[in-house]
Length: 514
Image (cartoon, rainbow, N blue to C red):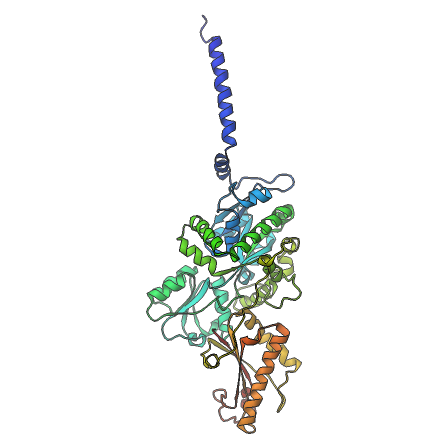
């Protein structure tokens, strides 16, 4: 027998081995678990096909409860075949947790993630730096509702007490935006306090606990941890009252949107279905908390609280946010973006290169989606109880002075007064939608006290009536007081000249925690 020559039996054996190996390989490739492992190993390398379809859409997120609608609908953070995105729409979604801000932006730029998280309030300072990628805001995920807070040491009970104090805050972040709004609501700015810049809200909490600052803007649950570890400290204010300041959104490149329109619309639709199911069921929130606990490597209770510290945006909320509801009088994405573009620019953070909202956002995903039923409706305004004597006397969180001119003996608002209210106070009233508004009318000392008190109350009521009728604010939200000449501006107690009399003819707006 020649060397190397195979026998018939050997040939048959080799054929059987090849057939058996091929059969095993095919059966394994059909195994969902094996398919998921293979796809996980090649994640990020799934190139688009000719029609722009992607097998896996990669979404960049941070440790936050506001993205729970999508993660719940996805049945987890990783791309998987149990996902309702996969079952209902035929593609998978992978949530990539990138808590480092710069790393998340790098991932967006290099294409490692297709959608990037952002908050509209803090987006203006960074928008110009991303302009070459033509970023577009595609949908809103949530409003912060307690997830952001400012903690303060003993002796600081209202916003004005922060004057001259050291406050730890991460610049050009949602925390910074929150502080800017809070100070403005009390006729202050960041120039009236000592800003201690830190890399993140977590570092702000550490600075507070080390007693190196008087206050800090932090994330939940660090607010509770700070209060527990710093004797006498308190949560001064949180986004439970400041309801419409911090809005989480997702951003995609314009090119990606144009080539994946249908997929992105399906992603949005599924996400909104998930959010509506969580908003309407505590049991679903508990399930989502388990998913977040695994994906974020955090305790389940932490994740449950994180979900409850946001308003998960519904399809109706998105229609309001993108200005698609003509009857909506609340805060839109455009309102918030434009206001913060000015605010950050005034503070020295250039926003000159930030594009207009019309060029930065796309309404297509929202406008071309149809979801019906109460669970998809927009959030309703808070219903306030009737004003009590206790609320009339309760100490305010902040006070903003607006000088409204009235003709002698009159209390009706003229057009100039209405414009003044809309410029100086209406945005604050809308942003702090869960807080009561106390309006105090004041007069100079011309005339007798009794008629002046009655007149000042009528003037305060006329302001409330305007906000109720023009901006659809709840009637019971307002606490109306008439001080007459009893509360003059410091330094003008004697109404000694025309300037002082003018200053004393004023209306004070106060935010009162319900």
